[in-house]
Length: 398
Image 1 (spheres, rainbow, N blue to C red):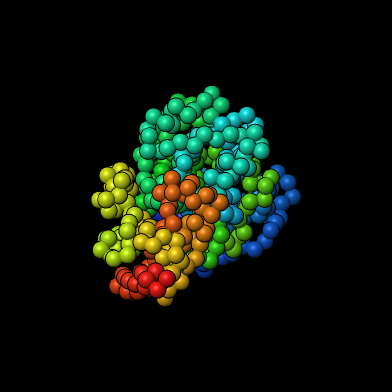
Image 2: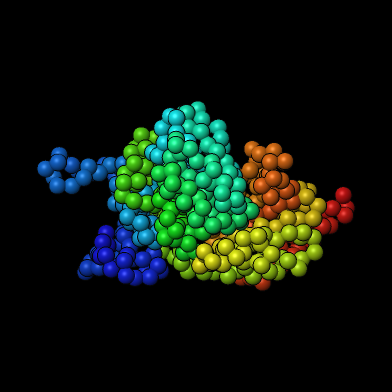
């Protein structure tokens, strides 16, 4: 593994993405680290002078290599790759809390994260207070002496809200709690959360970090102490990443900065174009001046991201017709890949919420989330234009 400190500390993000974790250059050495499929490794005892290596422990060479790359991109002491984004979130929360503890969390969260906090953790004696992240005073007001974690998501899924990290960070510090943040949509290219005081940086690495829709993985980055605690939970709950998935994740991360630059650019151009399309009643993208958090996003982010959302005139029926008539973009419940994917949160990430609950979060029927891929902009415009037209036509015929 390349452990040259200059690769991490003094070089740019793209350089770190390519080189961290890769084999040292020497005659006959592979340029790309191979997949190590072995579940276990020779070890006779402490006298060997090495750690006990076992892939369930997360210290297989591929697991270690991708963790080093994640830490290098986030600018943290350590990191850990896990089997999924939900494994990263759940193991982090389990490591930070015990029976009787309390979490303060944003109301704007991925649906499964909300379900974990609202329904699963209470069975283990851990309660959560959900707050409006747009109210800076709400964070401090919700903390108690039992608060151990303050949890945010940025940008939020699927409404793309971008809230100032400061109030949540200050509340966490005052409560002697950790600040955890799901940064899946931002990636370390658009925002290095550790620079803003986030203690536990969480990702569904299935998305932009992997970038090719061919793996399931999660990641957490933070201090060595925090990662040690999360690793202990991972060993107990079995959330370690498979070595091949770790290899694929590292492969994807080598192109992350280049991919994000194009995602950022094309998504903004599409958002601007959608604002003039008849049949689209709302366009949601942090790069638009009409977005409620445009100023905050411009101040905090290095790029507005590859996600945008639209609301179609005609509600759920129009959204169904729009998705059914796409020819280039694919209707699929994920994001962050090289191909453009669209989904309706009412059918996927927020299916467990009532229509009224979704409406309160800014997700009315007719809401479509778009993960903008790497295709040519004009081809995407043409596909979306005909899909909107088909949706409008279906309503007229109905």
